[in-house]
Structures are given as C-alpha cells and as structure tokens.
Amino acid sequence: MDHLKQLIREVPDFPKPGINFYDITTLLKDATGLQSVIGALHTRYRDVPCDLVLGIEARGFIFAPAVAYALGKGFVPVRKPGKLPAQKVRMEYALEYGTDSLEIHADAIQPGQRVVIVDDVLATGGTAAAVAGLVEKLGGTVTGLAFVIELDFLNGRGKLGGYDIHSVLHY
Ligand code: AMP
Image 1 (cartoon, helix red, strand yellow):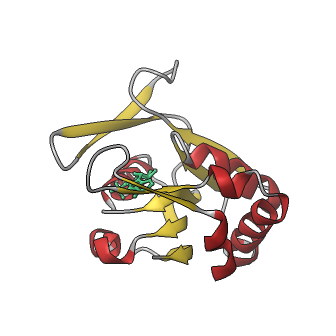
Image 2 (cartoon, rainbow, N blue to C red; image 1 turned 60 degrees about the vertical axis):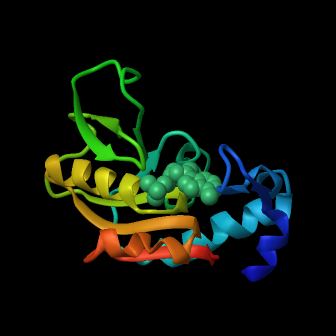
C-alpha cells in the first residue's frame, strides 16, 4: 500500500506553521488510488462483525460512506455542532488550545449495535476518542477504528487503548 503515499500531497505549514498537512485530494482524484484505499478498508473489515459505519465530519465523510457501501452496511454521520436537526448527543474534547465538540443523532445507534469508525487521519487521537465515547454513550460497541493515514509519531494510539485500530498508511 505504501505506493499510495506518492498520491498524497504533503503541504508544510498548513493550516498553521509547524503542521505538515497530509492532503488526500490528490489521492481522491486518482481512480486507482481511490479504489485501492476503499478496497483495502473493505478487505480489512469484510469479516469483522459490524452493523454500521460511522464517519467524522468533514473528511471522514469522504471515505466512510464508500466503505459502508462496499460492506453493505449503513452510514452514520458525526457532525460539528449545530448541523444535525433532530435530538442529539454531544461530546466535547480537548484540542491543542481550547476545546471542540462533535454531535450524533440520539437515535443513530441502537444499544448493542457494532460500529466501525472511519476518518482520514489519526493524529493525536482526541477526535477518535471523543467519537468512540459518543458511540458508547448510545450503547453501541466500537468494533474498529479505521484511518487512511496514521501519524505514528503523535502516538494517537496511546489515547485509544483497548480499541482495534487499523490504518492503511503510516507516517
Ligand atoms: P486528532 O484529533 O489530533 O487525531 O486529529 C484528527 C483530525 O484532524 C482528523 O480528522 C484529520 O482530518 C485532522 N488532522 C490532524 N492532523 C492532520 C494532518 N497533519 N494532516 C491532515 N489532517 C490532519
């Protein structure tokens, strides 16, 4: 899979100095690259018991529905505050400076349902930990955390102990 790294554009100092941004738009527009990533995630999860695939706004929305479709499962969006129209549950999490929050519809997951969470990048793990918390708040079980890219040097896994984590590419 490492050949896919050639399709990912690294943009230094975006969105702020010191951040090396992994831009997946260059991978998405490549037909074979896109197929390879979705295919790899499908292969990894096709035998994992799962009822729903959950995607995190915004770039998780690019990959999660495609994975859900390939697996023949439903898709659930986790959104930034104020976007979901019906009754919802919110989780706040710490950023480098300050906090952020994410929301899910209260009826999106039924107790006992098994969920695979998909996002583009695992960095510090704060976002994924918050989303796993939302799933569990609703009574669901996190059966997998899937990422296209994992930044090993930030040790996001350290915040996600106990969960099964799979990343297509490691940096
Ligand atoms: P974190 O909560 O630190 O694991 O951050 C994860 C979220 O931030 C993901 O949803 C990514 O979209 C985004 N992100 C963090 N760092 C990067 C990076 N270096 N390049 C691209 N996206 C990033």
